[in-house]
Length: 80
Image (cartoon, rainbow, N blue to C red; front, side, top):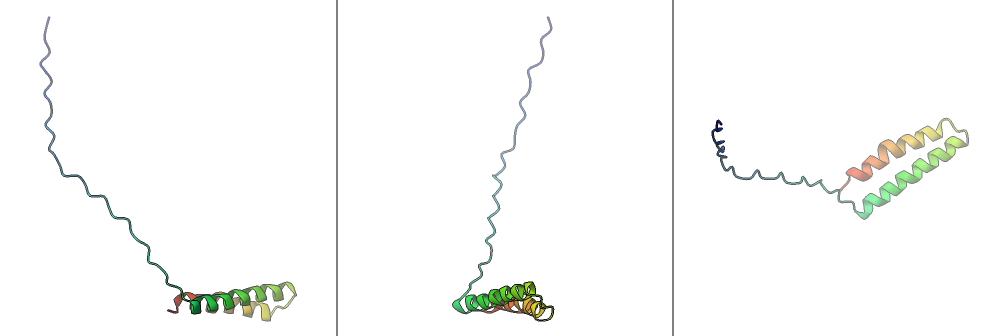
C-alpha cells in the first residue's frame, strides 16, 4: 500500500480589505419659487399650444409649443 504525500497548505497572504467605493451623490437642483412660477408658465404655454393645435391652428400652436419646450422650461431649470 502506497501512501500519498500529505497535501501542503498554500499560505495565503493577508491582504488588507478592499475599500468599498463611496456612493456618488447626485447634485441637487435647488429650485426656488421663481423657478416654479416660470415652469408653470411654461406648462401653461405648452397646454395652450396643444389646445390650439387640436383646434386647427397651424401657425400659433407650433410657436407656443416651441416657446414652452425650448425657452421657458429650460429657463426655469437654469435660473438660480
